[in-house]
Image 1 (cartoon, rainbow, N blue to C red):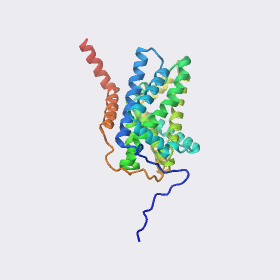
Image 2 (cartoon, rainbow, N blue to C red):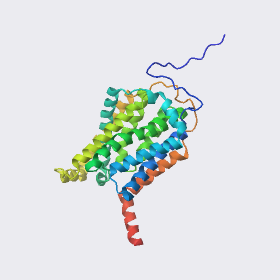
Image 3 (cartoon, rainbow, N blue to C red):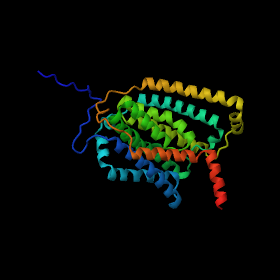
Image 4 (tube, one colour):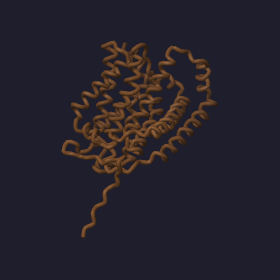
Length: 325
């Protein structure tokens, strides 16, 4: 008598992925390519539209989103079909969990960013801002606040992380997707704030089994950034010079940075203990390498942008331009 092989328990809220000849599961290499495609199109297309079409930031991001959707459907049809068949795409969000994750991720993100800016005051002016006016502002709310977060979650948590999970498991996938997503933003101060948020996005998908919870958190964060940028545009904040002087005060900088960092680490510990991964039959089902050329390009792009944004490197580039002229 043979003993039947036990199957992982599933319930109505976690239906198994039905793989067909057309949906064979998301591979790590496909997830890396999807994230690279998004990164290239989002940066190149939006820059070209702003420079040569003369459109605002909102319209540029909207155009890059539409182009990303078209190219993804043409170049990555298999992975996109696998994503649509995945239980994480079809499982509805848990709004309470998503909102709690947003609050904790927001606190940790701002704590890490504050720690970095306190230690490097010159970085305060390098953080990107979502600024626009008129009709383009509302387009910016739609594109940067909702559509771009959806595209980035599909690429990084829906495809890249899922492929890495199948190849190497929950923990490796959470860390590799967090690193790629964070460093791709290029600006050191932004990376410091995005790392904890990206880890929350990865873990909440693994904890709830729904990609939509990450979309909600990401959209809330971006919409809040756009709203604050629009509100503060053109306004002179009181005591701004005093705040900058405080950051330059050697006696206050280190204690403030350490305090912010310890607070952020404490919040991250709570997040890590709370958002434990949910058992999933897809995880480590196709063991193998998660690293590919596309992933390396993403990291190198981020490192290049990061180095180019450092004050010392910018000073050297300025001197080099002066010599060449």
